Image 1 (cartoon, rainbow, N blue to C red):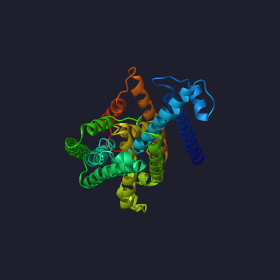
Image 2 (cartoon, helix red, strand yellow):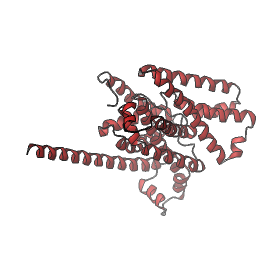
Image 3 (cartoon, one colour):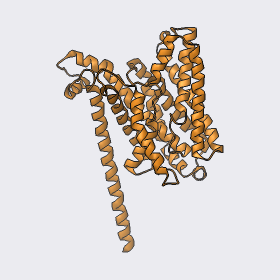
Image 4 (cartoon, rainbow, N blue to C red):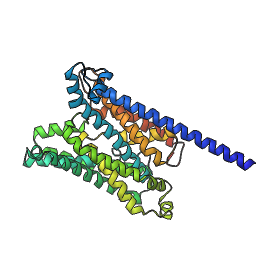
Length: 362
């Protein structure tokens, strides 16, 4: 009788936990829709949300100029923000699991710096030889930027993976990641010395980060690249769960660790590199978002974390884009400044929390 009661209680707790997660996911989805519509509605010209909905549904609205503003400028920007938040969040989650390091992320471990180097090599060296090369190549140049940024990100992440086999201390690993970032920044600085003033100015503006510079033509490249990489990350859920318990345990389950590492590196590099190519090196989101989702859902199961990180990342990126426009009238703040304000408290909380916990994940 006691066993039956115990099983009943366990089943009841499981049902309550499942119901709670469904409610949380529903709240996140509603928040994502609200943030997306708000990002389309607010700006230098405020547009009523009901008119925004009409534009998206193809219905007639009061002012034709509102449709032009939304469809030509704000909708590509909002879609870019949604993709960027999801991609950076998932990339950070993958690296935190792979390195078993709660402070790992595209920015902290130098992955964004590697992607920046790839973009710099394309932009600055191309400008030194043929100034109009990228403009002439059109959409092919967009693929080139993604490939260059992804290769740069993969190179740094690969070096970090090799180092992580010999270095067990997480703080040492983070220091080495910062050193790799400084090294790539040094190479970029050398390239800048041999570039034209116009290209230098363009590159500096690119490093501030922005969702507004992505066009519909570029989204034709960005959307399938990010969606396919996110789908690959979803397929890695069971493998990531196995890696949480250590490589030995993962091998005992029949997991090929080397292939899994390569798959994770590929997915994380394309996610971070693709976003960096078009939006610039956006800091802190990749580190902060996974921790927010772990705390919200109280789980380390990647079957739950990856979808929640996708939605939460999109929400935070959309609000960061909003704050960058509305903070000061008629002035758009650098996106990295806003994401730093969002991410710094979360990263600080993680560091303080680790003082009372010896293991990862939480």
